[in-house]
Length: 243
Image (cartoon, rainbow, N blue to C red; front, side):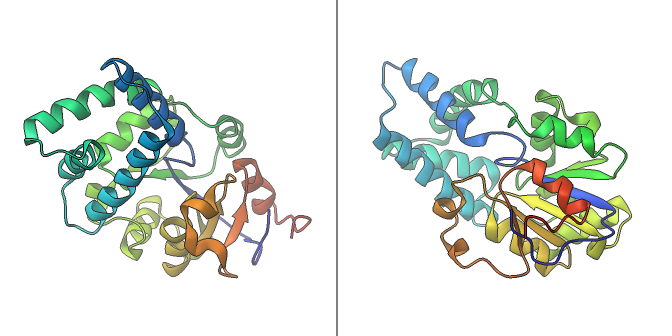
């Protein structure tokens, strides 16, 4: 764990969901493997790479406002299969995958103990998808009662890294941005975005962050870097031993 300026007087914490609380990569891979197997196909490394690349590209278009949430799903299917498809056919293919994907949701091993230790503090969850889907996911993995606020893009009208997203969360929690910590696995979207909005930005690099976030090769000095959610606790305690 590396620290910029150790945060003192943090009143609330906002957690990203996918890649931070829920092991999104595991669920994607397991879901796709089961989905393809049901169609008599085997998930190869090339197919996996193609699926991940399609998600990255089409989800970025959704965040940029080019596509709706449903449209980015359809475009992911079309790109992955490299074939023209009607909306209904793409929706059907994705719905079958989604059943396996959601059945594969699981928490990272460090989530429950960390949230237990944070009991009594205002804690929120936010994901760059719809609020209803975020709440569905949080409920499915058993975390609903842990959060004072669980929101998605439509709840605030913007997505990370837009500063308005972070400021809306602070307002909902009734805390000042400077006294709010945001923890997420995306360097630019989560950590830099939080810092730009005046929050304490913490980048959770679980060992694959640099590959997923090439811009993070030069980490901004204002960003704190941790490798486990358990590292949030010494940060809150002002522990400089890891600096």
